[in-house]
Length: 274
Image 1 (spheres, rainbow, N blue to C red):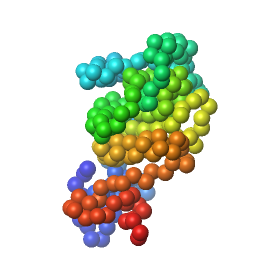
Image 2 (tube, rainbow, N blue to C red; image 1 turned 90 degrees about the vertical axis):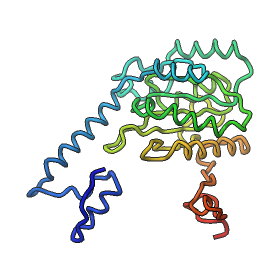
Image 3 (cartoon, helix red, strand yellow; image 1 turned 180 degrees about the horizontal axis):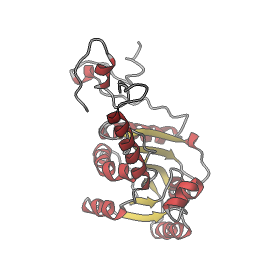
């Protein structure tokens, strides 16, 4: 971030060092300075590029294979990117060929699984390219103590969040987690979203899902996102539900707990019995 001199007559400059938000841009007459205008245009171009960037599933599949993770490549009912952007409904369901591929896989591997991890390009393949592997590494490290059965990682081209419901239903999964590129902002073209559903099936609304947003280096860390997701999964298995009735009350580390204190719980809620 740009280093700005402190000006006691303009405290906004000091605040600008702490956020990527567009504050303290200055002005030239009744307009903003040329540099601020060019920065805005550059950020807008990055967001547009992220939306249209093709999903490099071959590279991601190869990297997962190096970690001994099998992948299944599927496609939504949206045949191309323009169709995907204009017809959100087609991105929420699988193509006929992909649905048949899953039926055949399920027939060859009966009994269902506890968890299916789905990766879809969504509105930012850039986010998926950058953050999928680092997040899955932290997630699998923290999940090592659980005995859940896991299906191959399912990669979906032109996919939206609800496509994971059909995938989970066809594979007989108890839970699904979809990693998907979120709609780019002018300061975050690579934000990854996680959507978790217990007992997935076609027709569920967003009320049955839990969302963990803004997973990226400048946002929610991989470790914290994995910690929150595992809390939701364990609570979902215990209570057999997800969505609006399952709140994120995961214990998070604080400065006090890191140094031997006993403050635990959600930092937004304060210490117990406060």
